[in-house]
Length: 222
Image (cartoon, rainbow, N blue to C red; front, top):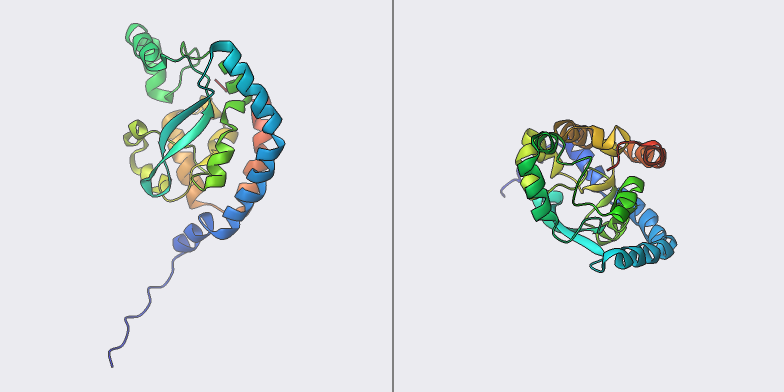
């Protein structure tokens, strides 16, 4: 009778990945996200009406981002930009060298010509991110994780992309509680790898507890 090959011993990394993508973390996501979606329903309605009255639809901005395993998913946000946003950005970067440098370093602009007046308020308060609760419920995202990135940003993540693709991206994470938009894109990638490599349930709880004061006290949301 032919004997089976010996089982490969599990490594600490295997155990860590089982945890970060396991049932306990998923249960915590649902326990937070489902009640939050119900509780925030009146705010969702108010914000939707405000966006519509400012400039019509669409209310939500849906964009393809990289998820766990490198698979694409459609991330939800409240719309904070004008309809011709891509053309406005291209024109702005073409005529403003300082803006080009800022975009290259942070992938964001402090004075972004695409953002509407209501959009600035939604971004400053992070209310624009709240629809991602439904991404959490669907299983594409987690409450805590790395921020979802665009396919155009994949190369900029460099060696950190492998770590990024090992877990679900999150609504909040180390980036949000460690400086947010004042953190350049390279450091954001490093923080993502740190989170994946050092993950524990206690780390998730700490980040969740730190998120609210980080948002309220942050001067770096734009």
